[in-house]
Length: 217
Image (cartoon, helix red, strand yellow):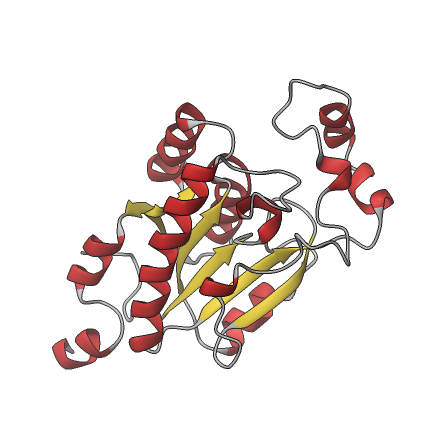
């Protein structure tokens, strides 16, 4: 498969796989319990494979110092005023010190994974050192996982595309709290203009990353 780069070197970009979305006991902007269970299990499979193939896992973790950092976004303020909005709790979401500001434990290898915890907007590159970290490690291909498909995943895929990374969104490892129609709409936008959409099994069978890629070279 031609990804558009001569020698792919990949990293997993794991977006907001934190308790604030996926732990129903503390989540302020939760997915459904079924979605949470499914996306945690899928990402664990992906990360276990990636670590075995020496592909770095980079966690992007949303965290705000205070409400003002959230409320400076005009549209988000309108969501907080709409009791029907899925994002109505946005002004109470992942403020530093809240229990939701923690990666789901089963998905985090403290000894091996990298964490960028300065994400404050949907685009994981905005205001973070993600691009610096990836370039420093020679990464040119991103395998994007996490939530939400139609906001952070879509925005980050777009941002990666315009920075000339090759992008694969891992279909079984992305989900949204906004429902299946918006999940599919996000994936359609991505595969049309910004990157590939493949599931974990398809990525593994490509043989482009890790030991399989080296033996094939």
